[in-house]
Image (tube, rainbow, N blue to C red; front, side):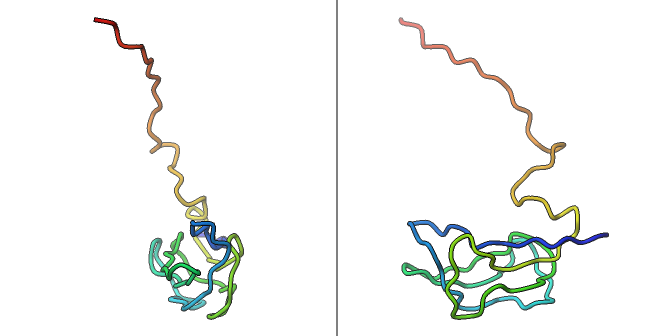
Length: 111
C-alpha cells in the first residue's frame, strides 16, 4: 500500500497559550507509532502535558529539538502514513456517518 507524509502541528493547548517547550520526545524518527500513543511531552507556562499521536504510522521527521519552544500551529512531527489513513483525524467515513433527521419543535400547550 502507498504511503503519504502528513505533518502534525502543535495544537492549541488552551488558556490563551501561544507556545510550548518540547521537554522530551517519546518517539524517534523511523519508529512506528499507534494512534493515541505517546508522542511528545511539552511544557507551557502553566503545566506540562503529554501529547498523543494523532496518526498511526512511522515517524519521518521531528521538527523541534528537546528544550526548543514551538509556536501553536507550527510543525511538530511528520509521519509516513498509509494512504487510506492519511485523512483528517476525527472524521467518520461516509458509510459510518450517522443519519441526520429533522426534529420539529413545538411550543408547549397551555393547560
